[in-house]
Amino acid sequence: MAATLPPPRLLPSGDSAVTVEFSRTIDDTANQRVLALDKALAASPIDGITETVPTYRSLLVHYDPGKIGFDALGEKILPIATRPLPPATKARRWRIPVAYGGEHGIDLEDVAKTLNTTPDDIIARHIGGDYKVAMIGFTPGWSYLSGLDKSLHMSRRQSPRLLTPAGTISIGGIQAGIQCLAAPSGWHLLGRTPVRTYQLHRNPTFLTEPGDRVTFFAIDHKTFEDMDRAAEAGEIVAEQVVA
Amino acid sequence: MSRLIVASIGPASSVQDGGRHGAQRYGLTVSGAMDRLSLAAANTLVGNEPLAAAVEIGPFGATFTAKDGTVRVAIAGAPRNADVAGRPVAMDTSVTLKDGETLTLGFARGGAFTYLAIEGGIKGEPVFGSLAVNARAGLGSPYPRPLQAGDEFTVEAASGAPELRIELPKPVSGPIRVLLGPQDDEFDDANKALFLGSEWKISATSDRMGYRLEGPAIKHLHGHNIVSDGTVNGSIQVPGNGSPIALMMDRGTSGGYPKIATVITADVGRLAQTSAGTAFRFKQVSMAEAQDEARKFAQLIRTLPDRLRSSDTVELNIEALSDANVAGYAVSAVDAGTWQVTAEP
Image (cartoon, rainbow over all chains, first blue to last red):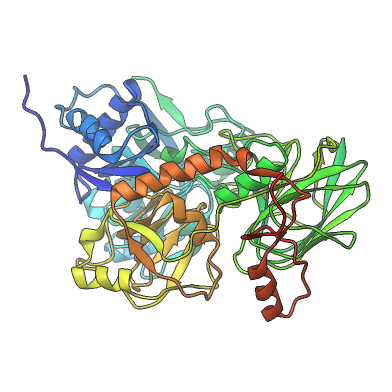
């Protein structure tokens, strides 16, 4: 039998939630453990847990203190959280179209200048990445991606923009992102996708799940307009790669 | 069917309920009433489920007019002057509007949010089981945005049930109770003591997303950036400028600032009802106490129907009267409160 993994920290987030923290930093093994615990709790629910929220490095577990107390819940979670990681299963993979630069990616030129290269080279490096949805958070459908090419790691903007467009494809720090709704952001905007990761009256409402794999491909701005109309009408427009 | 017309309403007013659960993992926040107990009290008065959708009314006044029939409603939460065609209506009571009659609500006299529940409930299309307005995500029904004058609700005609009042326990006073964490280890003892020992005021720039706290700057041990993790209602995060923000119902589902403490479930509504500029303090409690209070709070909401009384037994609320006199209002002495004049039925 494989050795158990070091236990996570159980941090109280008030009286009705516990943060199960595997790492303080962005770390792929920690993220795998977060997603494995999330999956295990979905497969064999613990009575009293009401909702789980996976993030890069921790799983936030909401629970009803009328059904289970903090200590009792911790005792149930720890043995599951220290199990060896299950063998990797085939993840769902999305190919996401992106219109880079121009009005859709107003920071592309500046990012190229900062990194002493050309916009085309930045696009190539961004497209070259094999990404994983590490978490979804902040606003509906905002997918945080790990797997950004190291040469594209750069600190966030000094002052965040108060509003960035729906569908923004951006990079910030060591992360890449797919933003669904218009929102404030301090990240560098490389382009826009017509794909809605969240659309209310579509089935599914949410396209991406934590653990999904993502790659990008370039489309021209005319194609963006066509796909954007189709997406508005409820088409998914992202390509799902069947393994 | 009758209609209830929003004849006038101030900002920060919207349809809210017990919130939208189950999709925080997709970045969709919970929303829902800022003060669940008052929402539940108003709903209970008109026979609705405690956390059914009702109108959450911000600090300014509002008027509602019945059309095409009678409408029975109830009000609870931040106290205000209220009347129907000149007849005073007490807080924590139900009232029936005849066709064409208008319920007029004044400014909140302390607190921020008052709940107007409608007998038979608000009709709309739930998303993730909720009608609650989340304007950023374009969610909420019948209007996916704050309410405006001219909006209307299609409602059941009033049942004709006798009017009721609800006898709520005396409001808890004193500090807002918190549990430290989840990132209290990002602060040294001196700064934790500064947080727990200082007087705070809620900034006027606060909203349903977060309450900004004015007081001393809280310093971090290792800087203000952490790797984003999940948030809850009542998470108190400390951004780079050291001014804490208590995250409320429209919070982002994840955040990248260290969270020094979390308001206990039983006190989130109390914090929500703390007016901008009012001084208050925090107090650390143990997990055992916080969970005990959370269970009592849930029990109180479940047993609200036991607290319904005939509205013929009128109470005098001395505090409301004296508050109102200080503020220069002419006010009805009939208000839900602490000092009972007549015996219970």
